[in-house]
Length: 367
Figure 1 (cartoon, rainbow, N blue to C red):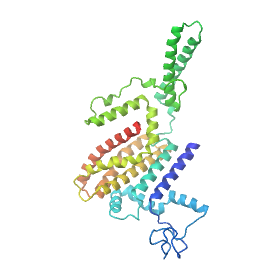
Figure 2: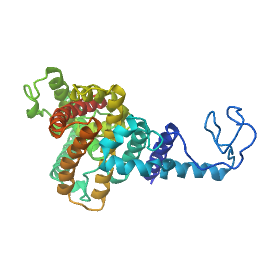
Figure 3: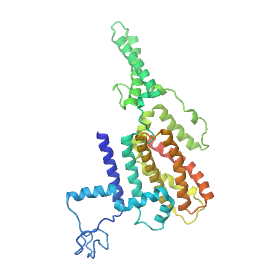
Figure 4: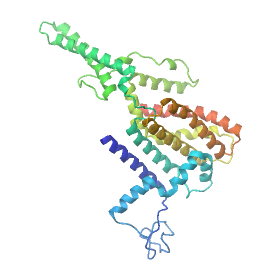
């Protein structure tokens, strides 16, 4: 139950973060005379002409709840104008915001913060966009772990009995103790994967199921870029050595450092649009932030559809098809590209996106 409450709190926190960054267009106040309590300017209407604060300032408990609900559900009405544009006309939304239509739409950063917090709040309920309702203990890996756990438990009990046997020589007892420590470490590794907690506090955690495993797809040069291959190889080794810990770190650190996706993506967006004049880095930042916000909302929808039983194959097909189509439309209309130019830059940017994701995941793993 505490996880669900934490998830709900995370969603509200994200809305409040976004609302805090978004200029308010709330309802009119009731007191239009006197001086603004914020800056002291003489009032001539429901809002201060100097700082924009409402003339009437609430000091009731109900006003706090109103602000929370207003932040979560309304974003001052801008959300309902921004979302349809983000979904169906992302390039037009980007271009109009860049050219100055700011008051009509939710700012890219506010929408990004809200989307990130909401996505991970929903993932706390659903377990992720592709997790179906099939219990995880029915998979072959889980069956293998259960079998291995039973063997280790039997071996641990046998070794402990031999150590406690008074007839066991001291020299042999020392060897048995070392063997017992190794068995406990292996058992802790399986327990950590299954429950997130070790069983034996006096032993380390080691994954015997993947002991000595190699990532064959990463042998040699897989991308042609030496430094990128090195990062992929190290990340792959960490994943194979302890997949449970890897996914835990990705999930727990993901939303905390999601903002890194923006500075990581900016140079690549600039490279992909090289030759398109009249677009400074600010335009690329707006493009990138709106695009990432859409992807977060897409993952959110995938998670909800998975929760109600939609096939993983359908979700996977949608995940493969929707992002490139959306990115194509955003590229073409935000930068006023031809169809051919948009397709070429889409191909280049798609390759860069994988590089950004690898870099981002590697950063999370090494934190």
